[in-house]
Image (cartoon, rainbow, N blue to C red; front, side, top):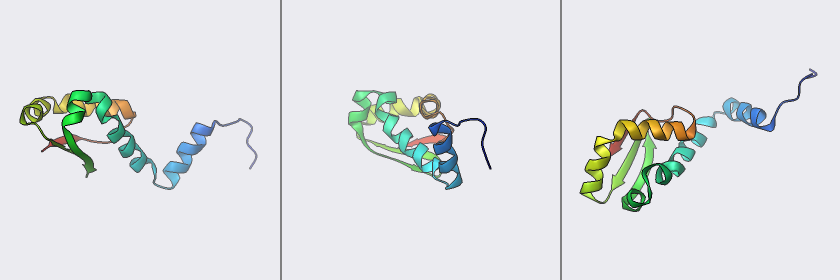
Length: 96
């Protein structure tokens, strides 16, 4: 099959990732990498661990004050993190 229109490398890579079911793990990794930028350095320093389980971001926070603050902003943080990645990766945040 001969193509008449050139395709960008980005388009080809995304098609390859989708075909091999690698797009979701890549988006999860990108979301975890953007956590410090979205919440700020002060909260990032209080973060002990962060992982994604069943489309829920599970975050362990050292400070109870920061934990309660993040609990109130869960929906906003979910939206900001998904927007930063550019895909719907998580539906909720669980803060421990």
